[in-house]
Length: 101
Image 1 (cartoon, rainbow, N blue to C red):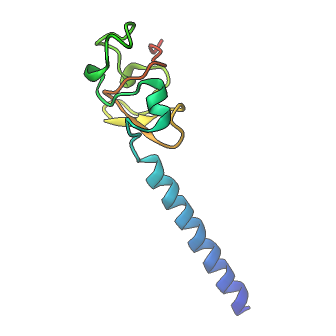
Image 2: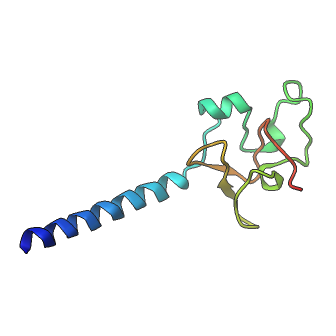
């Protein structure tokens, strides 16, 4: 009986640690030098986008009004499926920008 109880405690503790790790990772902002971010031209501040490199970029475009952005109104960052497990800045931008319909 004692071994079973110890096993259940260990499973519970392990599950809690995994959940905490997933939550911490989901709260990590993607870095501009992340390989995926570089490939998509991601900038945490839409005003810093290179207009020559991305001529279709417009000042009004940002992650906060992109169809891919997943956050509540007023959040400073949110999830984007293009950056698995990491958040992007609401004021950010990348070349995959698609206006929210």
